[in-house]
Amino acid sequence: MTRYRNLALFLVLAAVWGSAFMAIKAGLDAGFPPVLFAAVRYEIAGVLMLGYAWWALDDPLPRGRTQWAEVAVGAVLMIAAYHAFLFVGEADDAVTSASASVLVSLSPILTTGFARVFVPQERLEPIGLAGLFLGLVGAVVIANPDPANLLAGGMGAKLLIVAAATAFALGSVLTRWIDSDLSIEGMEAWSMLLGGLLMHVVSLGLGEALGAVAWNVTIVASLGYLSILASALGFLIYFDLLDRLGAIEINLVSYVAPVFAALSGWLVLGELVTVETVAGFLLILVGFSLLKRREIAHELDRTGVLG
Image (cartoon, rainbow, N blue to C red; front, side, top):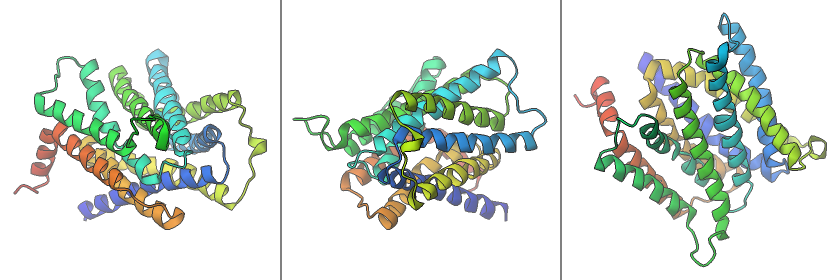
């Protein structure tokens, strides 16, 4: 029964996080300025998560420089930089929900690469290097650059989304490297709130103004979906599955989410999935499998899939 529950929650999380790319695209197409959109999303989500953390934990307030350093890394890299780059990238008409989600799925591969930098004794073997290379090739295939004009066809916007995945990967490694004893819930809540405020400052610097937003049903629905379902509820499910499944299996959400991103983008926005997006997704998936081959084999053996 527990296995079915975990599978159901896993699929719900993949569906919510995958369709979030469609919700971002819908809100941007409706006229919400990108960085401001990301900022308001996480200001709302941060308040909700902080309320949950205060209810679930005895003391969710960070203490000391180490815990605040972890929050700062999460706020700057995993929330502000990741979402500012992602939202600006998705604002380009050439970027679909599916292509954005597949490019973001580079994050687990990049995380492995950054981990080798901060834990130098763990060197990548040749097959691991091949996996890292395949993942990067997958990103290039999706970007589909025009040699005559490298910024054509949304190339610049897709590079911003790769930058978003890079920021998230680096942030996830640095938070583990800092290794404070701050709870995951507390760290996420404060990172969301402070990251949202930081993006709001950047948004003001870019001249984006909340008063200039032409509020409509699409914007309100997109903002509500992203703040409440994709962020607050999504991370609660993530925390639960992280405890039950471990980091390796939960990483696989990144490779199921693009299916829901493509489906929701097609159903709601009429987006078509390109051959480049599918090919890039397969290359990134193979790259991840090569990098994590031992961990995946261990999990399959532990769960009895290999007999």
